[in-house]
Image 1 (tube, protein in one colour):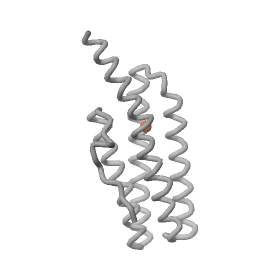
Image 2 (cartoon, rainbow, N blue to C red):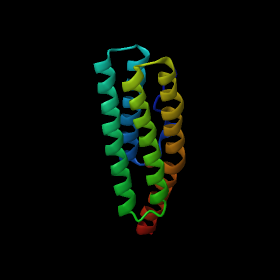
Image 3 (cartoon, rainbow, N blue to C red):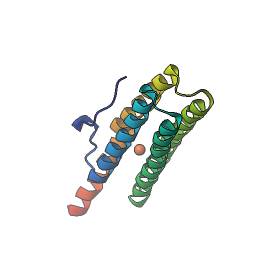
Image 4 (spheres, helix red, strand yellow):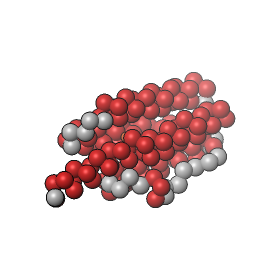
Length: 140
Ligand SMILES: [Fe+2]
């Protein structure tokens, strides 16, 4: 199964957010690997819990940072974040109902990886541009 590796393409230029995105990608890869290798139910559950805990933590941190910066795109980000959480929740429920089936492992790839890369390169990068603009504005 395809995995996302961190690369500069995914960097938005904000160190804290970049570090959190790396950690998020790692957890996502852990889930994908656990499913792919058909690890035990307990192990897969553990990786899923790690992923959803970290996702909540990261989204909250990002939204807080946007709020503090007075970012006008906050609402769109929040909506987008909650869509991801909903998708993740659905995948978790599928896992609890049916186990680590092949289609489920594939949807992780399709929905979560694709969503995340698109989100980082799109909305998160827009925020980083906004942040660097206001920082430069303060300097000038
Ligand atoms: Fe985001």
